[in-house]
Image 1: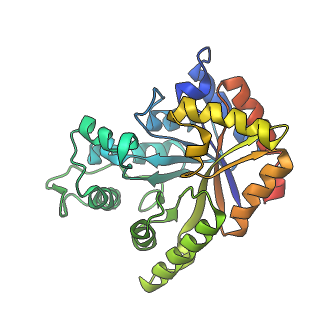
Image 2: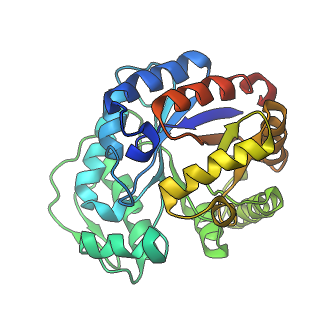
Length: 312
């Protein structure tokens, strides 16, 4: 089991009076507490530290933790440029990078970002898969790439990552098409289904499709993105998470938990809630801390850390 934490890179998470420079120390403390990974989000929804800049900052400050994106939105960047950035972070971290990617979602969580990035919304999944294929070829020494959407000739030699072939690349998403693509093309699966039963059935589908594609199911890391908060009770935890959901997403908790995994209550409640996903097959938890300033984030980090021995 790997237990990771999402770094609070959004201004809504570090608070009006917070100093984002403290995020590096936050990551160092997570490593000291025994978290095996630290992830960063990538979005244009609210002001936040840019994901790859944040990982580059914490790479030399940490020693053991996996550094991950959850999830990177490649369409926000030029594909060859981001291949260079990812290879750089993998080198600076000594091969500790993991790249979860996504194509965005309809509504305010995705489609407007395509307009701002001057990239068409149509065929976004093909664009994502081709971008990942391009990265892998560049990291293996290719100087050209020809797909249905992306086409490049005479590419200068690219920076090689620390690891041969580059960092593992995971896919976010839980639609039937996403499950099939994760099984065929990716090194891991990072969804956030509200019901552990949906996680279990989705993972079974991923593993079945992987076997049908001639891959070992063990080649695909089963991960989970989940929001969690330890509080004095389920009721008080839900009140705090409602504030969090409204600040971060502009929606109440009762709407957010329809689309995302959320666990709260006492330490025992949270351990039991996370344990249900572990029983469903999750082996790398990426935990987003439900708190709205750095002091509260640090408090939740310390509290969640007490569950690491239980979950492992």
